[in-house]
Length: 131
Image 1 (cartoon, helix red, strand yellow):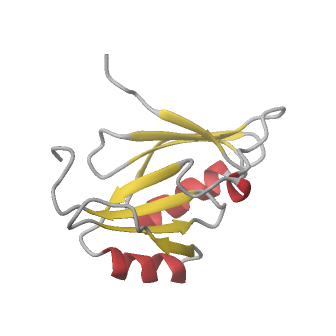
Image 2: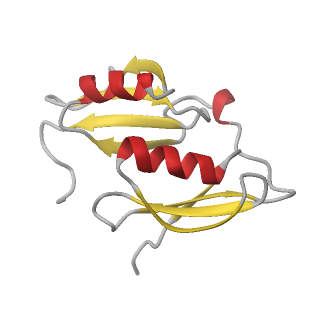
């Protein structure tokens, strides 16, 4: 079996998908509806990893702000996490911290996107996956 996507209940799926497209280089593969009742499927630059961002009546968004940052996070590879950290903050993200728990040679930075979901910028000393 192969993972098709991971679904996340969010407050503004269409707007959030556009932000991820503009600032993380994701592509919007499918989109329907509005921020009040809609869905967007976004893929990373490899086209192999996909997220479903959705808002459905009766299904509230996850309480991202009240969750511990590492409890649920989207880890994205970055050649320069420090530069991307500053760039994403200028685009509306909020810096949380540099992760202290990591493998030697890793650089991990946590931010919250404008909807409070956590993005972890990752530069690995030794890759854990073949990309």
